[in-house]
Length: 391
Ligand SMILES: *Cc1c(COP(=O)(O)O)cnc(C)c1O
Image 1: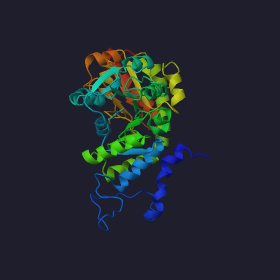
Image 2: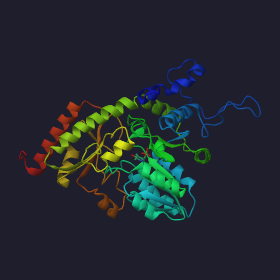
Image 3: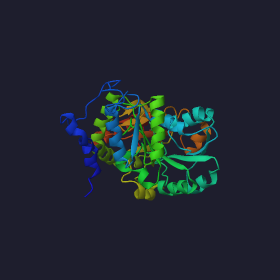
Image 4: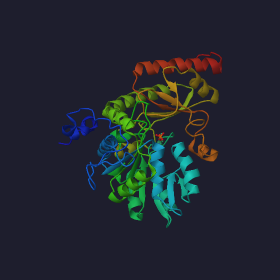
């Protein structure tokens, strides 16, 4: 019988226990370099830019959770994506989804373009992607569900197109984590994670991952990481290893809370729409049921005017007004001035990101306290914006 992922999050690291005095928690090897027994002999480690036992342990755990053959761990999600872009050459062409994390858009628009990599942004439906493939196209790059508008992309179908055309499908799986979705199993070639989010889970450490099931891609990435040096340090590796042990229970509780909040939001007359792929009315609901084991805990909602949105941000207390996601704390963000500040205006409009849209990363607090917080915050906002008339 296969071992459940809840258990795998906790016990994957025990393989090496015998060699490590039975340590239940994998040790932090806080060393920059490793002494050699003799010329031509190595302990398996030479210098921590290349590899460090604690980082290696983290990489093994993440590779196993994503069903890949290799995972590389970086200092941040953006460091992972910047390293990934080193696989491409001037003149190469990428098809990328038009609703991506703002930092990724900034990287593509400013750094990849400068390096001669051509990027076409489109809604990555099968038809649109097939239309954009050219002789120099090397990869398709997507997130699903997308940030922050929660569009769902069919990974299997894009995987088939990629295979047919001899190009790579790259999936940023940050929003669902390997607990709810495994893109490599659905035909992706490379999985990207901001480990800062659900994998770490405590809003205390930056991390990033690239995971693959292709030997050649893994070798190329290993060369770049040792050469450019963005590998995650030992202590941060340990913090992420520690976070992963509770990935399963955190994801389950956060999702439960997300459903509660979504149902509450849907009953408020100031809320024009609530975007959550776990709602049967969401256009991506059926696709998600086919490719994921859950819907996650990211919720986007639009209120009826800008003043109301800003009043919510001013009045939150238990919920914090902060960028980022995937931690135990519930956070609320204002994509237009935060995560998506560098996304071109026409793209924002097209994606429906305006000054009335707020994004929630639902945490694992008590659902009763979260709803009470929302009730209080909405009351304050009503008073401030509509002069105290009760709705
Ligand atoms: C946060 C995030 C990133 C960037 O990761 P960092 O760890 O902040 O560098 C990339 N993709 C998605 C979907 C993210 O949410």
